Length: 395
Image (tube, one colour):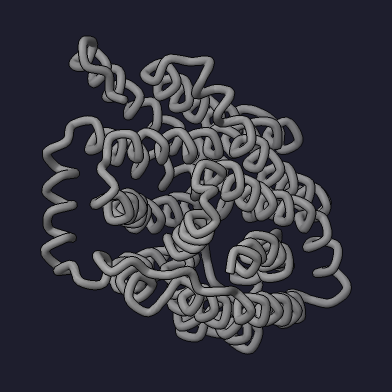
């Protein structure tokens, strides 16, 4: 039995390696623009994705708890495979909207199920203390794969075309689906099955609202993560509107994911080195400066600031999640993390179409400037929070 659960770890790494090869990583937005969509429509598609994710997230979490984490991961990659086939075949806003909904289903089925699958497998092996290390390695592998595909994606698109990259990616996702079928489902504990789910959700929401530290962390994460995630969707039109080679876009995408991976790997170092409030302030300050600097510097130099934003995001994600775990009891832990994720979805649904419209009216560079100013205003608010919590830190 131990041997079978131990195999889940290396199979999970294979699942990430083969099931996350997304050859469209550098051309996703360009594909939409090539199909006569404007940036406002692109961001509306992202908003549809976010709203679908919002509604899928809690039911999919219940599905993973009651039916199984393995089943959830199997269906997640199957959903992503279907999504990319629809993208490859589609040429209209409606078709892309259906594909986005399947992509949201992938993220919802994956979210929480992957971490619970690894944690429960390690629990059966009496190795729970290794969870942060093993799951962190998995997250870094994913980022480094996407980084390595940055240049590959732009290079292949010039020879194979955008659509073929969606079909090839769907093939890799299907391999991930097959790997997930070989997972050994860890036991689901009885108390998870027998609890009143809706009452549990209500209690978790009440806990989040009443706990100042957890509430502030979720507000901080939701706004910051929503704006930083928009970087990926602005990078492509930003370089598409410049006179530079498409390979420069590939380099920018590579650096974006590469430094996100470095952020995940080095997060613990910064958590140990800085006080908690100082790290909250520093990350937000660096994010604001990165966005504003993109507007004032050339596209080549802008790669540095995009990479810095990505690195900051990697550190932030691990830092915030660890902070929420530290202040949340195990009974509410997974649900509170879902609330954290939904906070980003809500704010992203608000900001994405506005940033898309701003990009169409002005430029991607101006959109970066606007987001930087927004983060700087939020920085002032966070500084005010620090003063309110001088005796009781935000974290």
